[in-house]
Image (cartoon, rainbow, N blue to C red; front, side, top):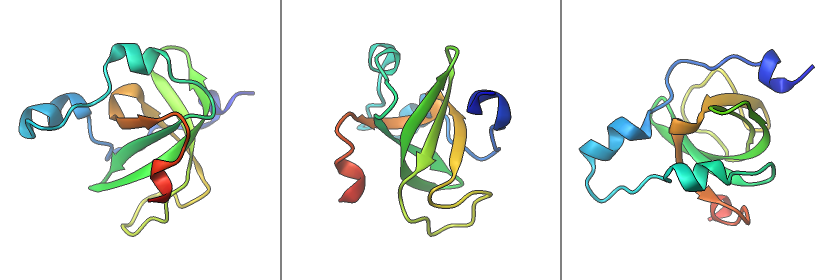
Length: 104
């Protein structure tokens, strides 16, 4: 069975399509970059106001992504560092193909 089927999407993720209107200098990844997303890439997402990095472990059909949380989390979440989480592609703030940025 796939992680796509086993995991649910928690409430609290920020939709970057809405956020783009609030912050004019913010440039989220477009459809082309999201379509090229591969297992092993790192992505930055926002849950309950905390932005963090996660490494993609599975891409579910067209819209959902499963990734392992890499960052040490500060805020309260229903998951923690090292957990696999599922979120929608429109929750991706940025993509790091080499998984270098999350360590900065």
